[in-house]
Length: 208
Image 1 (cartoon, rainbow, N blue to C red):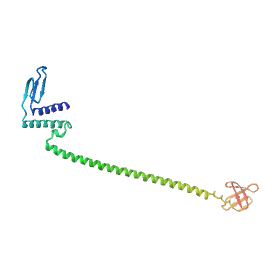
Image 2: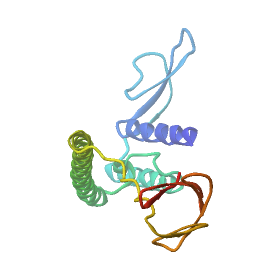
Image 3: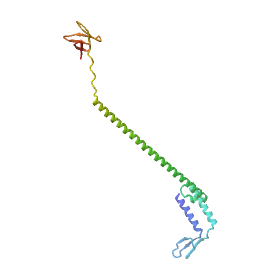
Image 4: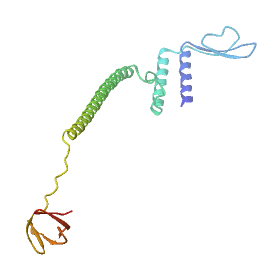
């Protein structure tokens, strides 16, 4: 690609030189050949060209432009637009390119604004969540403190002991309580009740 572009560039330079005339001169002492765009001042002229007419120069430039256009079609990005476009095409290109650039900048600005809004919203949401968490922690601590204070002021008393069974009647072999449970007489004041040995105290049976 670059070799072809260099050849084409050399051709364009040569076309510009031919517009003013081109001369190939040889130094009589060294024999060195030199190309220049003015007549030979000394030595021997090996050849010369007449200046190119403006019409011919324009035709050559148009041919070069078309060659560049074709090369650009095959290898995009090789030449800048002004080298392969006509003046009208290049003017249209500049207007379109400027419009696209303005549109791109506008979209970038809009995107930057949206991103800033989203960052602000996320920061605000994080602040709300942090405040909610802090309030929940404060409420929990206050609740725990209140519970501790209540335990100090109002200690939890153990449940009262159940009332001992009350004896309703007795016979020679034992007694009955108010729930019709039988207590068989043992030795002394000891009776054998449903849950084991019991002691009669007054009209109640005290069982373990």
